[in-house]
Image (cartoon, rainbow, N blue to C red; front, side, top):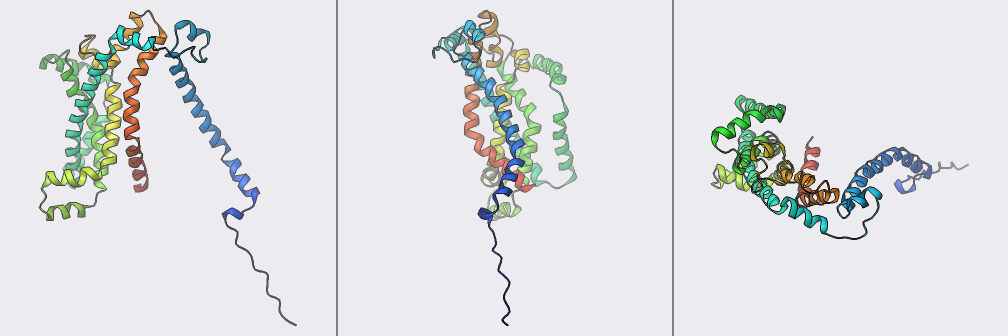
Length: 297
């Protein structure tokens, strides 16, 4: 008698797996999908209400809060510009934010470069000191900052805010940039040194380009913080229409216009446009920073 060979088993690939298995896996992800869509709705509904209210008056807002506006009139936006002088306030915020960002990067990038290249105990202590900056609450430094502005003669000036904002951003900026620069191989710096590059050239041509995602992250985070800063701008600059920033000018719409919520919402929308533009430009670089950080972990 001839021996019969056992039947060969076919290896099933992912496309040939039983449909029941795929259905079980789909049901296991259902709670996560529901939570994700629920969170999206929590964000989308207020944003929709916020945007449609910018084109309505008070009667339409209270009568039908979620209804579409009857027209796309820009009267609320023009009223916001005229009543609170938002054009000048936006220009002031842009100047303060731009100069503060340049000063922050000019200080944080070289400091992070020095800390990343140092291996001694002093560098570790210095890095911990910068990390302690996260523990200082905003209100704790309010009174000393007010006294400092008065003593230096920079009270009620934008120049003091330009100098103050980088000081508040240095701890986070240096910690982020230091971690990115430590991932750069020392061989890159040694190759540049062999070609005759000095310390500044190594920073400019080696470290800074390779830390592009980290620098973009620092710029985006600090831009959001500087643009939305309200407390110190209110205390130091005050209500002077010629120098106040957009966040200080916005609350004046409520008193000037008699609480016209459509005008107030329109003014707030105007302040969000620069934030949206900057985020759109830098979001890919920030995503690269987050992905590279997750891979290195």
